[in-house]
Image (cartoon, rainbow, N blue to C red):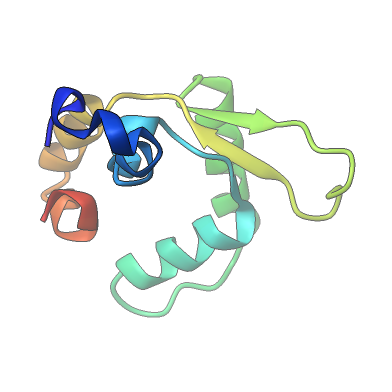
Length: 105
């Protein structure tokens, strides 16, 4: 459905837009860790090494730290790379990322 066909319902057209077209949204560290544990095979204990990897992703500008005054204990992040970059990296580690992105199924 193009924008020309839904002019009377402009508000509804914007609501129907796919999330990947709207851009990345901030997410909590807890959400990222839950996704990590769901994807990783086997049981992995949360260690300082995992948190150092997150810091490395931020310093490489692959993730951005989102400032939030009300959530000091639970930091939020935002993805700063394109879907093409994510697909490229996932291929190099033999991980089919598109299986986990429901907007693209």
